[in-house]
Image (cartoon, rainbow, N blue to C red):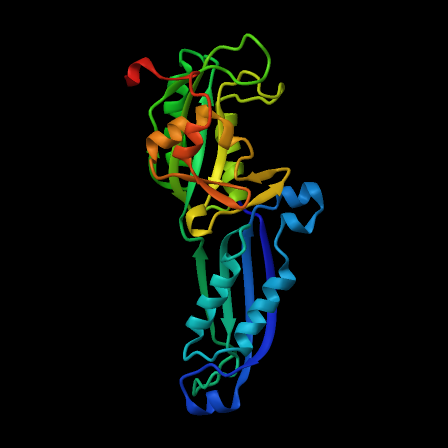
Length: 296
């Protein structure tokens, strides 16, 4: 992904430096911030909520310039980068701090320090499903292949995958074949929007189409949860293109049963509450969810 927002030349007077006169008299600092952001949703919606407010980014950078003094501009760049990455839409940030009045002792034009930082890895939950044969691959084979693609093509680490379950279709047109379902838990440095785009790209690689809602499919990858609700770090979104946590996960046995199998301590946010997945499983009908024969 190459979408970027660049804010250049944020200027302010700060008191950063290792010398006493720098701390006493201060000097001008200039900051550039380049954000890697998935801008597809904003381009489609024309809505500020789907992008990053660069006014807020600039205000935060200026507050750091004029705020707590640091010995090194390396530290100033680091904290500005951390502020930018606190926005859930930002995948990566490059911060350049200019110190044009630095006490270098020789004629010079500028001194700059640039740092590039990615998001810290956060836990994610992805539900996998398929019920159409693709070539010579059964739906269960497709799930296995999809996990391999997720490991190679998507920025996921620490992948753990549940056993595969055969499940009775829920909703959608009648007469569908049974599904193969599984749940994957992992960690990612992608933003929620970028991760969802990457999941859709993997689906497309398996010839996924969206002609009929809840219809038969070669592959379905649902982003169920992003972050950790137990620590309050999960992302909650009600945007049409990004609804988190998944609005129907709490009632879907074909998600809850494999999720519990791969993570017995799992929890899901429901409104203002955080509920153990084990408790949610106990409240749904699980008769249509059967461990696949080759998993028995």
